[in-house]
View 1: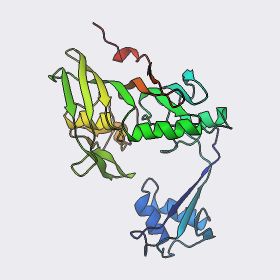
View 2: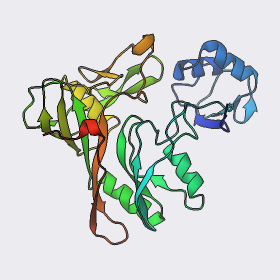
View 3: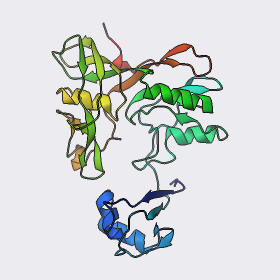
View 4: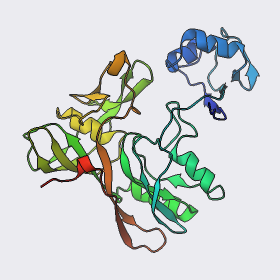
Length: 305
């Protein structure tokens, strides 16, 4: 059994957390662990207030620094190999495999694309410019120079980076081309506290969709996203009553399913759906020329006719 090195989580107590006990704060905000587990961690000295040990019943004050020193744990197995499609002194284009998380979270720390890149390029500390869900395969844009980090991040904010995906939904009567403008924001989740979903109070999001192929069992779509909200394509298609085939989390309406396979509560990192980042275009930060890349889709996302 291979264990990672553990992790230290730091945060400051906000106005809402003030006057809560230390135990109640963690139980309320991080429901992935039981009250007994949080109680034992506090007693073991794993959770500190202003870098000092504290008791479970200690009342919190606004602005205090909380530190949770998580012990090493065994991470789920994931595919760690990725294909380098292009690289120069400023950036890399990577084909991320389905199942590999991009950033730490959800029980993953070292079994992530970011950690693998940092191990391979320790002097550069490469940074992903955008994210793909764990269950999404395809193109990732990685900055490896300060110039690239600055200019590519600005292009993301200005919506100048073109991102085109392929996705699979069930049989449909959708028109050849259509646009989804459902707002996306935080919605309650029984384990994580919140996840992102379709909500009228969320942020603007736009997905331009085109039907590539239809059959009696499925519909193959091409989707260009103007914005990059978390899980945007999954939420948008579910919001119009066509969730991705095999999506364990998002149901009709763009909200979360409460129960998944084997009575397990679904979380965003669960895999099973068919979504692939197929094309990526942007202005190269070094040459100022527009460049475009394609990552061949998996067989189920290739047109058959």
